[in-house]
Length: 236
Ligand SMILES: C[S@@+](CC[C@H](N)C(=O)[O-])C[C@H]1O[C@@H](n2cnc3c(N)ncnc32)[C@H](O)[C@@H]1O
Image (spheres, rainbow, N blue to C red):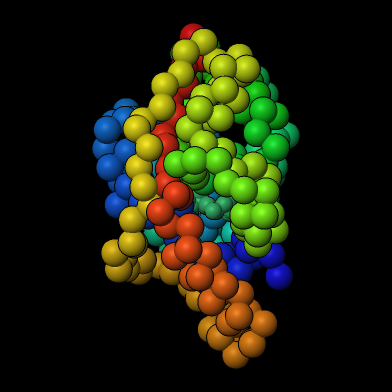
């Protein structure tokens, strides 16, 4: 089982630094108008997509993982929210050029090769469109061995420091971009997701339990260097 399938089976609703509280704060700052066409790339189990739709935003959401899309669709159905979900890859978005007013994504681009997904975000944005991307970042470069450990467990393609994220953005077609200050990973407070659907039989599988424990260990041993930034990028 890979890490994202584990997250899907656990029904994790906010699998990114800062959790759902950080998502709500960012969305509050952005203050999308009702009817704004937003693409959420890598929507996971659809918690953020539902939150956005509940604010009157017109949401399309994609994820590469079929289990995630299934849970996200279930969540939206229970909430009675009209969201278009599709199983798709952020590096090859199934939408025409200039479709969306905004692309919103949290902890997804790091799992792609980088520049291709960023080009896709740029391509599907309308000329006045804006990208909001919260990404895992590292306070300093890791050793090759440390990188290998994290990459193989999480399926991360790159482990970027803030300057490395900015360098990636500088090579993109975005006209302008900025990044928030680095925010160190905090201990997640207990956040109740009322529509979380957990596949409980997972806890009877020793290999899966071992995987969850390894996740805890990695999170704690890298907590002093791991954090996140929010990149905002304007097409024009
Ligand atoms: C760490 S989770 C974050 C999910 C969600 N954004 C959240 O914050 O809860 C990463 C998500 O990105 C999805 N993902 C990874 N690579 C992807 C890709 N190339 N295209 C689309 N989705 C991808 C995974 O399936 C997973 O749902």
